[in-house]
Length: 142
Image (tube, rainbow, N blue to C red; front, side):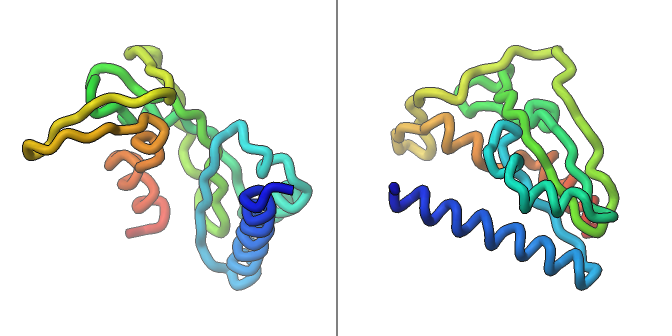
């Protein structure tokens, strides 16, 4: 078995143990993962989702203005599942179809402060947009 795969499986198990512990202590937490992730199909995830005050919501991150640095009028779709524990349901936000999407493949050249660099689209899309950060902070009462 691949070392990264083993580490990923262990991390997944710990993630659900932590979320369950937070639920048992009547705490508040949220966890997001790509909607297509195999983690969402695990028994431990389904067991967690069966508990009271645990919710799963689908969002499209383009609805939170997730866009590439080289093309501000396009968006990364990035379908995502948000699981909330001990708090309100995260509001579902889907793509409104008012913009074009760009694939999370490849890279582009960027120049910032006179320094050129290569930006991988998959890496760039892994950063939360400010509107998504504000929505998550509001969910947690911050």
